[in-house]
Amino acid sequence: MPGAAGTSGDIKAGHGTLSIGYRNVYANQYFLNPHVFTQLNNEERPTRLWNTVDLTGTYQLTKRVNLQATVPLQWNQATFLVPFTDGPLAESFRQRLSTAGVGDIVLMERTWLFDPDNVKRGNVLLGLGLKLPTGNYRGGNTWTGGAAGVWNNKPAPLTILIGDGGVDVLAEILAYRIVKWPVRKTNVFAVGSYLISPRGTTGIPSQNLLLGPPISTSPFTQNSLVNTVPDVYSLRAGMIVPSPFKENKYLRPLSGLIAYRWDGSPQRDFIGNSNGFRQPGFFMAVELGLFYQYKRHLLQASSPISFLRYASFNSGGEKPGSPAPRTTAFSPASLNLRYTYFF
Image (cartoon, rainbow, N blue to C red; front, side, top):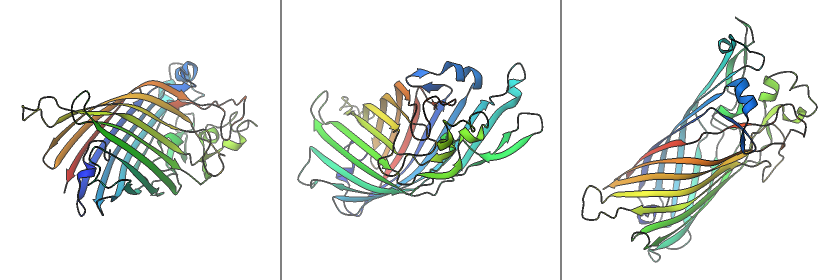
């Protein structure tokens, strides 16, 4: 989180950071609007697992400008009962799909709006970058044909693909201010980002087509038989509170995080058409975390705990009356870990 922890503004030109992060998300419930989609959950009994390890390097080009590159490594899984199975043998037809590999690489340039040497108690950071289509957005998998020994090779569902297939523009803004409450040198911050995806559809069959009739033959879903490249947004605001135990050398480097998060994907893109299959929606969460810094080393751990999960319906390619309402599997919480070295 550049600036929010009061560290990036202190990095001198010619120096930077190297970090490795890990994110784990598990979900086993579909949502439709703000409610659990009980009927479909009972039919499919879904599970979703997303794992991401990212390698990130930041270089301070000048005292106001830094460059950053992020390379994600992902492995994701999805399981569900195929729609035409039921009864005591249903679990034997549980579909198990997975994707793994290098995801979409992100290159960023960020600039402090004010000179860090002259503004010590707060600043604004503006960022602009590119997300490159280095991840596999085709995601071939083996699907059960609904009977013993019957298998088909098809693309994986959109939710577990490790790339979106688009050259996207990432815009970011961050502002922070050092205050005296509840503890001196508390950092109050807000950071927002928006991923602009100009590309329309990828030509990769969506789950509306993969699941077959009656969904794929419905006139309400004909525009959602291939995947789209969706926009994505994120908003985070809160505070990082330094340790009040200044006399204890072991507790002095500890800081606590409390923040509000709002992450999601809109129903329609900011630029370009919004055709194709997408799973729009958002979640809101309270994020709690800890920071521990010792000399050039920084350890971070945080967990967003959701209090609202909303899966939007009727957008992009589908029309009202669709037999396949858009649903999204949301996690009640996730785990984020990161180690950073300052050089």
